[in-house]
Image (cartoon, rainbow, N blue to C red; front, side, top):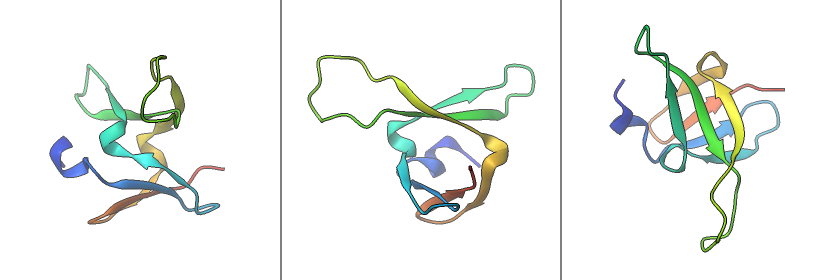
Length: 78
């Protein structure tokens, strides 16, 4: 799967059905040895105009992904 295919997808937690953000607003951490995605870094939800840089609010392991659909990514974290 290409990064361009992940952009814009909503990230939803299967455990409590919370919306965690979108991949477009997130960063990906790549394993330099394998070249595979290791972690999705989701920033804190902040207002549109903020003087402070975004901080990582949640780091999701790639293994926590349950399903990737056409519009969203379902993960399971407790």
